[in-house]
Image 1: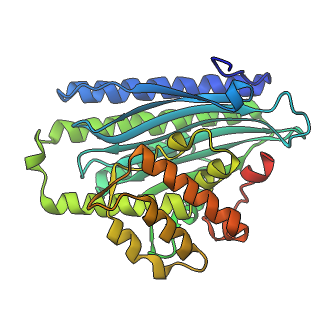
Image 2: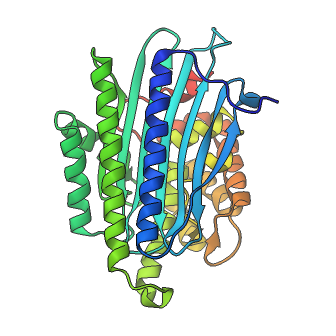
Image 3: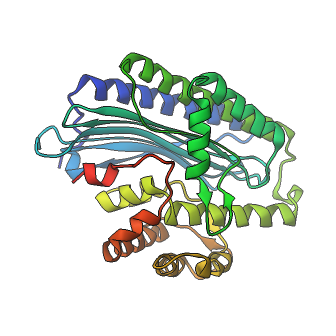
Length: 351
């Protein structure tokens, strides 16, 4: 077995990897500093995985959870490539994907994804996403996160916001996941250097702004669980349930990752919060179009029968298997997943 992943040989993939690793390290440092400043220090722990024993790359996720500050937090970097298989349509894919779920119900969660994909035919493009996900919305936080992304990408912001609003809409529940969205899919211009600079600005704006927002909430919070109202905890659990529902029934990126391989199931599902309301989740079954009700049945069955239900690593493995089994039995159901208006070719490109 190879002890470390073999890296992609292209210059573009190398630059993309350097960018996402820089963002990963800086984001972790910022979150650790915010936690320490609040008198609740905690460290992210690295976990690495290999694709095909490292021959086709791999990645490292920085994770933390069950602390006074973090319910669950995962900052993942990966690079997969097929330099030794020239018949593959995909040459390489390099990505940062992160989700931070704070322990405090009124501190917002955040999701950020930046990836660089190179196809064998020579085409390459970015996928840039950033969305703020509060259990209990705060107008000032929403405005600050929106302004930071608009400043980072003034020419692209209107398109990204509209595409994000489409992608994160949940038809079955008649609402969005999150309060402000930025999403550019299949983004490439005739100036690759400018595109890379845009990716850097968006990633830096999203991560630094979130650190500032979280630090602000920590500074205002009264230490101790007793200071959190029962209503706030209930609203957080309901939102975390909605988050899991959207990720597992609508998110194309998550589904693609699970269908492509089973070598990083826990990492791919690192975006999930620590607990959900299993009964609330099951209550949404009849709102789904066929055959997605069957998928929700399998998701509910994969979760521990408890209230609230803990989303353990074992549960994540069971959830990944449930998603794979469903789409192998109903491949056309992929068309029922979220879309920002731009086709996402991830699964096809990896085959």
